[in-house]
Image (cartoon, rainbow, N blue to C red; front, side):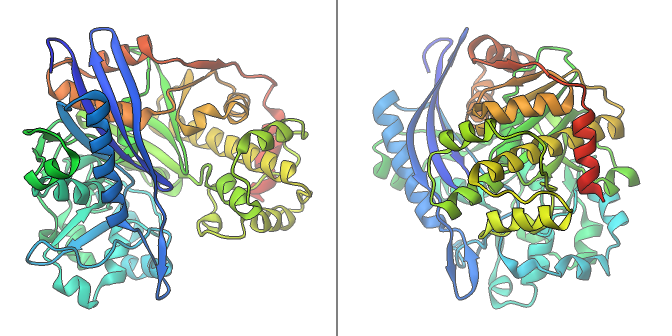
Length: 486
């Protein structure tokens, strides 16, 4: 690390691909460059959908090698990824099979079994986590009685598993731990009463660590495979990619903002100082996950661009740009669906499922790819609107502006529709928010930035943002919302 400057490697694992990014941070400087991108291809074996985590690890090693070759030895490495999924280790620290994918059907009907032991209202009051069928709590309940779980001596969430393979050190990063539905968001510690009632052994989890904490150093074998000269420290970041992305929202100091982290999922909500654990919040299915510096990510999960990605896969289309151009010419709000409907969770046949949802609500059925695309984007904007408005009301937290970060910030049509639907200005960017947040937490841990305000000031000064002003009076969006509420 040169005086006042640092170079950092950000491992950012997404549901469809992973990448290693090289970041440089200094006074008035924030640069990010992609060193390596690699696919994340789930695999079905014996009727179970798995993550190919060994292929991901290979991609991380290749990425660190390429990042080092392009930008020199990093001052630190950080790892973020998706939430809830985990790997199990035996007594020798060996992986007991590939992690199961959250979209696997093994948790079907499991939540009701857990609720028989811990009623939903009691569960929410203790953990503040929204209902999702794939929460870690339900995955562990589904695994109860299996030989694999019986043999397990350690559970590591996916980013922590990769960190373990890089360093030999085991830990459970707090922002991701908060998604398990086993943590108390008020204390930042486990909720033993929930675990006991649900039959979960909290002893499986490694000690908790927070963003900015040391997470070990690259092992000699990793240094040899990546060509890096040691020592290279690994720093805990917001290992839930949404926590890293929210850390990279370029909000002005004191701004009353909502955020939408867009990608495969849309995570729409607020950054708060304390959780909202009311019954009304539970009924609206909002979650209280932990963020940087003890903040709370109060948000709702919306199916996100997964809907469009799955449509494109069904159509064998790889470039969204022509689709978006055609969709922009389609009349808006002709048909909409509930983008938060769990019926859209599983892969396969998405255009037919969108059509069936329109038919079931008595709306025109999209007849072309462009009409289906416009239906999906209108529906996402409508879901964004509902999440932002309800979060503001439930938290008594007014919102003046909406920040869209993540891959969806590049989708100009979605950003414009979201501004129209919310009736608020939308500031779109940065698109690489998770990687930037990852890099900036490492830089802060190395003393290059004093606090979260300085992080956001640097983002605002260096990252391009596109502003979308709302158009229309909102009446058409109100009517569309009523059509899917019936």
